[in-house]
Amino acid sequence: MYGFRNVDATDWQIIRKIVPDDISNRIKDVSFNSFIKDETEYATVIVPILDYKGSNIGFIMGIRNFEEYQNQLQTVIVQSIWSGFLQSIILMMVLLIMLKSMFNNQISDNK
Image (cartoon, rainbow, N blue to C red; front, side, top):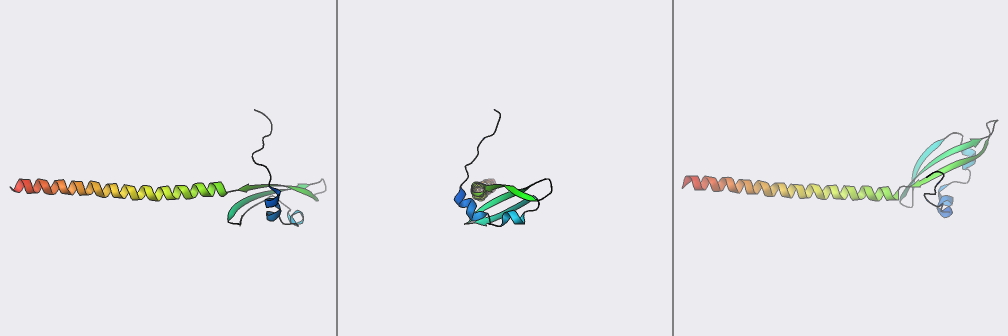
């Protein structure tokens, strides 16, 4: 499959909140930024468009919402904690079974 594909549609209401009005005057070089807006982390990449004289005539901006990745990270953390907890319970049960069998063997040997 060749050509371009649309991954996400642009939500201009969010873009207007994120991008400051004077950004075209401030951008002189490629910049990478990350910030949190309304408890959601965003990452931006801004590439200026220059004419042959080197003056800024515009820019290209890419913005990515990291909410999905944050949810995945929180899920992995919770699963890891529960997995460790369950492993410790199983280990303690195995240890108790081993100790019980050792003491039962000692008692039966003494009789």
